[in-house]
Every structure is written in C-alpha cells, then in structure tokens.
Length: 435
Image (cartoon, rainbow, N blue to C red; front, side, top):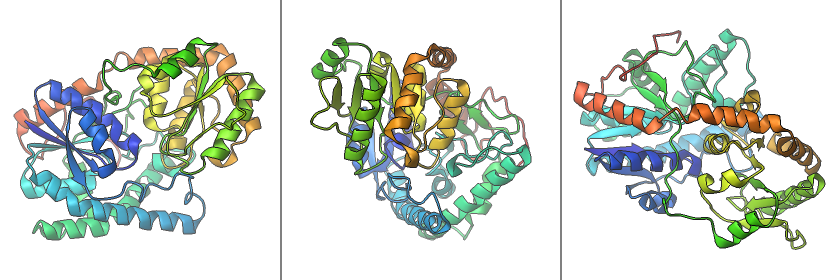
C-alpha cells in the first residue's frame, strides 16, 4: 500500500513521522513523507520517499524567540503569518497526493487541507496528531499557553481555538477546493462533518503525559509516542563520548528549532548557570546557534545534532524548550528536565512535565537568567525525586507501542471500510462526549 504522511512545521513537527514511517515501511508498505524542502535529508535518511510541500516552515511558526505571543498586534501578525503558511502549503499539497497515494496520514497542521483532498480523490485518511486539539474540560487549548481554568472554561476556550484555526485555513481551503473542482465548503463546515463522522485521530504522545480525556468523542485515541528514526548503528561522536567519560554526568542545554540567532546570549547564560551550579555542561547548537564563550573551559562542550535516544541516558538533566518530542525523550531516558518554553504548545508540555514531578517549574523563555537557571539546575540534578518521577513515567511509556497502534488503524481503515468515512479505530475506548 502507498501511504503518504503529510506534516508541516518545525523539525519537531516532522521528525516523529520519520520513525512512524519507518515502522510502516518495515510492515511492508510503501511510505512517503510530504514536508517542506529543508526536511528532505531527514526523510530520505529514514529510508522514506520524500514529497515536497512548497511552504517555508519558518513562516507561521511563531518565531524562534517567542515573539507574537504577547499583545494583540503580535497575535494578529501570528494569525496572518500562519494563514500565509497554510495557503502556500495547500497549493502544493494536491501535487504531493497526486504522485500516488492509497492512504493519507494527516498531522494536525495538514488535516484541515487533507480532508478536502480525501474528498476529491476518494482516498482514505487518518489523523496522526502530535498535540491534543479537541476541546476538553481537562485542560485549555494547548497552543494558547493559557492557564487551566474550570472545565466549562477549558472546553469553551478549546472551541474558540478551533474557530480561530478555521479562520487561518479559510483562504487556503477556498483555493484548494476551487483547484479540485469541489463546491465551496468552509473549514468550519468540513471540521464539523469530520467530527460528526467520528473521524479517527491517533495521538502520538504518551498517556504518562496526557491521559485520554474522558469527554473526548469516539475515534480520538492516545496511542504512545512516535520516536524519530535514526540509524541503528549510529554512535555518539568520539569527542562527545570522550567528554561523557571524562567526568560526572553533564547537563544538556538546547532549544531545538527555537530562539534563532540568539545563541551567543543564551550560551553565556548557560555557562554562567552551570558555573553557579557546579555542573558540567553540553550546549547543543540548534537553530539558536548556541555556543560557549572562548573561556568556557574543558567542562563545557558544544555539539551539533545528536539523536536524543543516544545522548539523553548519559545526562544528569536536560534544559530544553519543552517541545513535545524533547519532553518525551527526556522522560524515556529517565532524566529530569528544566523546561524553558518559548511559544505555541511548549508551555503546555512544560507544565505537564512539572505536574509529573519530572521537571522543575517552567522558566518562561523571556524571563530566563543565569540565576534562575542555576537554581533550577541545582534542584533538577541534585534532588532524586525528579529522576524518580521520570523513571516512573518511562515505565509507563515502555508499555505503549504507538507505531503498532497506527498499523492496526491502517488495516482497519483500508480493509474494514476502505473509505474516508471510517468512524473509529479498533479497540477504541472513547465515547462521544461534549463538543
């Protein structure tokens, strides 16, 4: 079967699908991953076919420094940027599907476009989301960074967030439906149609972080984390391996795809915090270009991209932006976190880590100082309770097989119904809840 996974956004929005795609390929499927040009090496390195989506992933992601998350003008600019991103995305999405597709697996970003392609082509489709997007009383919408309120307020805010997303996709959907010769249909109307049909969505995160909300409708499942693919024979770079052997377990400081161009300032903060806490450290460059000053000394090492699965088990703690993938990787490695959320869903994951006891209280990126970071590092690396909480979560994560659950849903969607009107997944536990 020819399966197309469609994902868009930053590296953390794409990398987990390389692991999922690799598992689907091992099960005998022909798997392509559609993403923007910058991720072609990542996709091909996982042994998957790459299909191009035309948008620039740096557009509409909120910016590396968290800008746009404050005042009304910043939020309006973020909405405009996101709308431009998905409009450009939609114009090339149809071409990616037309290259040959028997089943669509759609991320949260691509689903509002993919639904219309599924309608036009008759291709079955499943949701494979990395964040919870359906309204629930358990927590407010994850991308807003809002604090939890009453169950009623949380659900109301969740519905409002979906309406705002519908506005973002308005022009893109209109353009796409015209291109596909489909009659006009608003994003909100299509979303309601999918919800009424209990369109299946599998969420690729652990129940250790987010248990399935009881008020979710049928068809929405939490199946376990999809881990990014990496070469099984891969090893740590020699310089990094030597550094790890040379002394006590160090702390990793990295911000992934966030904080672009702010590396020198962040590196200075990190080095001063490590000095105050008396810890060895590893700075991971990332998009920020994080780097240590020339006088950092032999107990601080700067590295490039290294798979989390290889590095994290050797650490005393991880300072990170609290992206969904990095948060999960720290838990799986049984390593405490110091979350420094920047934007979008990161405050949500940071709060979940802290609630588990596996992380210190989050330090919002805008308020990061060497003093605050050193105190958090001393607690994370020095108090055993954080590592114990991470170990407990890791044990629960080890019982989950997110890729296997997707394989099961793929069989059900294609053999059981063969249409986009599939109303659930095998073994679904949910019931229709408040909407």
